[in-house]
Length: 413
Ligand code: ZN
View 1: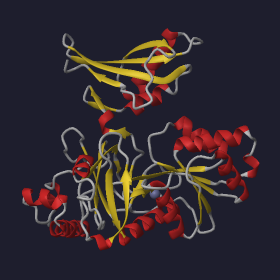
View 2 (view 1 turned 90 degrees about the vertical axis):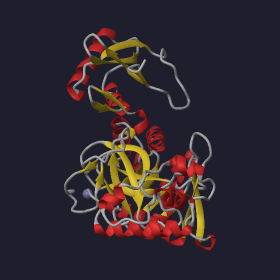
View 3 (view 1 turned 120 degrees about the vertical axis):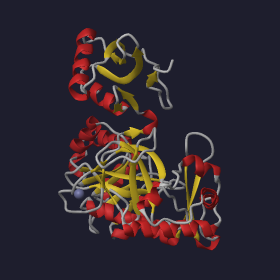
View 4 (view 1 turned 30 degrees about the vertical axis):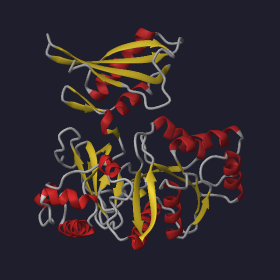
């Protein structure tokens, strides 16, 4: 979806404001000779930016308004190096709440609902975003924050919460507790709003079934307001993204080339009206695709497909982009196989083709050879590649509390 006239005019205004502000990006754009945009081609020449720039500009280098206009900051933690600080004006806070309220509305939530909010409050954008959107909608916020399961369940029962906002892990934990304690008849939950991350269908189905609720994926990142910039509508998996505030592109994460609608790649977002910290062509490193065509719900906001993972995790075999999530999905369907695995990719010079090897764990009940065969067949039918599969005993593969490296590419060795 090409950038339209109205969006272009907004980007042009953003660039002029940035240049006037003298902030970090004003230097970048001055050096690149960028003074504004009047065509889609101008827009496509603006360099991408990402978290590394925001770290360079720490703490407030990206602020594009005078201090008097800033009403709040948020920060994303980041696993390495400095955190990132994002300043917000009163209008930014209000625009975010307006988008979040739209998300609730799309999910069919009304002012009569009672929304139990379990994501964290503080520097993090999570809890406060869920709350501001709830208040903007006019529903009742129950601002719990994370943890304290006893209290969560008590409030859920006593206040008859109808909506739960949570990470998928916490929603799962609550579902398990409710199940274990036989509280299902005492709760009135109808919907769950789950912060968008990659999560398995098995987990989703368990939570939906045990709590008897509809689940919605809400999208967002601290650098671009926070959660609440997009959500899926009932019955559909695509997340509507609000194109009056944001312009979304999909690029090839390796080459930076803009991909046509429907093709999978990295999400790049431009903020069209953000004042405190405008970002133009921000690389999210989240992988998805723009779903072409119109949504059955009739809304015209463009749609992003479910997040497929992070661009840092993507790998290419036989010219086809693949993601660890696809491997996880397949392994999740095989009896006795754990969620730990390793992917090795090498090149066979004699046959001039790539070889993919999957190492997975299985428990002692199952026949390792048959399990390997089953995995091989699933890969063939679902991804059209035939890997070598090695099954090892449970707990053979290394466990890590941090992010485990799963893909080892030996093609350059
Ligand atoms: Zn829709």
